[in-house]
Image (cartoon, rainbow, N blue to C red; front, side):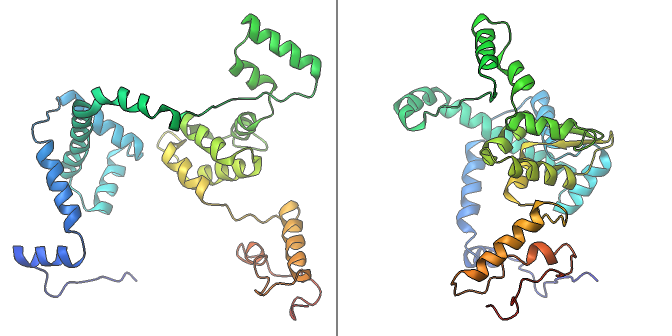
Length: 286
C-alpha cells in the first residue's frame, strides 16, 4: 500500500509562497538561480549544440529508449519540454563560464600550480629480474608501449579488473559488460591497491546495473563512484570471509572492551545464514 501526502491548503499567493521559501531557508537558492538565469539570458545555443547536449544527458542516465525516458520523466515530475529546457540551461551555464573565465584559467592555474601538482605512476610487477630488464629495454627501444607490457605481464589492479570482466568462468566474461575508462580508473584509484575492494566494487556495479536493450551492462563513472562507496555484504561459508569474521569476533571477546562485540554478526545473519557457529561463552560475553 502506497502512502500519499496531501496538502490541505496549498499556498496560492505570491506572499504565501515567499513566506514558505524563507521559512524553509530556500530563498538563497532561489535567488541564486534567478541571478544565474539573468547572467545567461544572452547566451545562445545552436540546434546542433542542443541536440548533442540532450543526447549526452540521455546517455549519461541510460535513457536509450522512449520507454526509459517516459519512466524518468514520470519519476521526476518533468515534461519532455521541461527536461530539454533544464539540459539547455546547463549548456548555457557552461558556455557562460567559458566566455567569462576561460581566458583567466591559465594564469590562475600557474599561480597555484605548486598546490595541485601530483605525480601519477604505474608499475609492472614481475618476479623474474631478467624479465624486468628485458621489459625495460623494450620500453627504451620503443618496441612496446607501457600499456601493452602491463596488459601482458602485470598482475596489478588493471590486470585484476580486466580478468574479472573477461574471464567466462570466474568473472563476467559471459556477459556484455562495458566499463568506461574513467570509471575503471576511478575504481582502481580509490581501491588503492586493495584487489578485494576493487573486485567488490566491480561486482556491485555489474550486479546492480540492468542491461540495456542490446544486453550491454554499461558502467559509467557515476555508477563506479556509487559502487566504490558501498561495500558489498559478502558471506561464503566455504571461503575466507567466514573464518575472517569468526576470528575477528573471537578476538573481540578476548579483548577488554566496553561495547558488546556485535560487529561480527551482521555478515552472518543478514544474508539469511542462521548463527550455527557460536563461539564459546558468546551469550555471556566472557
